[in-house]
Image (cartoon, rainbow, N blue to C red; front, side, top):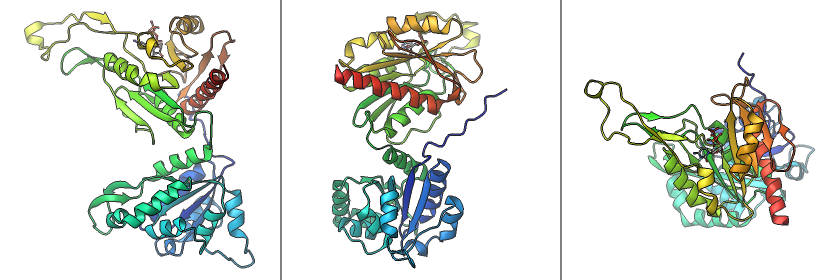
Length: 412
Ligand code: CTP
């Protein structure tokens, strides 16, 4: 039986003010409100007068299950802006028009949203959206600089097709899933990983047999991609060295694509000296064809080929010299028998601070599934088996340990 998909509401108990101002991208704010709500947040939508030209309150009310606010002084509630500002864990403005940015940069409080912004101490994310010429104007650039100086996160704009048939350019609002990721990072606040550099490897490698064939494995990359996304959400700068994977690149993460174990070794070696933590979630090939053919192997010319293999470098061992003192190194082990015993050997042999072991024979664990059941091993500490959970939750458990270990290193 396939493992059930576990419900995950990472923003539960978190309150987000979603400000929507008057641009055509306001229609995408409906999706943002829905996704934030599905992630567990209580979403208070504030629509500016301009936004009401594009979207109606009822769409947001239906999706958030909460009243939508449009007025600075709703009847009998002159204090609404202070309450919203105080209760919010994050304020997200999407879209943020040029006019809104100018008013916010000037510290104005002439409508509900600008008043909330001025009154809040919550993390603020602004998602600009406007015509490319309005974005390019020095006034907008200056306003954005000023707003960033207030500590607000400016997310976007993206380059892409603009509304009103205006062609392509910078000015397009970033996509709802990116906005939700930025909201997640804002909600997380400061963590021990904030500003730290985390290097993650993911996916399987491909070792060429000839120009069109390779030896590979079934790794989807999901575990490493979840770790990269979660580390960014916790405020880290993340480099993700990935073998071929069909997964979307996590928001905020710097992706370095590689194919072979040797390319992955090179990418890890280059980034490792600057990394506070290395999480080696990749399924690296242990062997590769020793003499890949320069031309495609033809069955008629050569019959059934024999492929001779040679060992690849063990990346964790081969890059030990490049580790930063005090840096935390996490490995993974996929076993099919004697998982913990084999894991303990790898922990010591590869010089790891943490090893995440999973037994591929257990249901819901291993490759190509969204769940995992792992045991965490640390030197001089008892085994720590975790129950079956989503890979996103496993990622959070691993990063909790990385934060703890980094804390130990700082204190040492
Ligand atoms: N690893 C690595 N370089 C390799 C192979 C593996 O750095 N050439 C890393 C993996 O990314 C993982 C850890 O080492 O974090 C353990 O991988 P695993 O394949 O379980 O270990 P191996 O040493 O290859 O042992 P086995 O004989 O069980 O395959």
